[in-house]
Image (cartoon, rainbow, N blue to C red):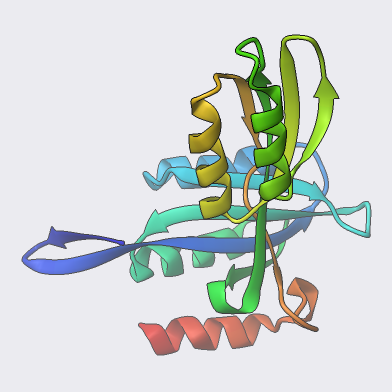
Length: 190
């Protein structure tokens, strides 16, 4: 968490996850990304994919900002034409995961050490050659960062990360949330 001052007031910067349901058609992602850019926000992470209904895509967007920034972005997202639903994904009531695929150099004769680390982190080998091992690992950010840091010693040849995805715990579905409930939460926090 970061704190900065604006007009003499301290503002707390935090990471927020926003879940969206949008129409699955061309141009929607561009309009959403452009809205963030116009307002001077960087999208820290973005994951998009079809839902159980091929006409609808689900987006998970991670941003850094203040509570006010989050509220403004949610309000602006709701105004966009192809946005069906917008809701904040709260850390304590969401399951969050990210995927990393990493190619690791095995020229140093340390293949077994790498394989032991792969097992310890509950990841899996998805490709194997004389000079490299390609590993798939999923989990929360701290787990992924720890694995990446450990593999630097062996030589990371290439890395690919998805964006963060999140889903409500238990019966909490993005489609079951009431827009009015989300608006009430924003109003109460203001």
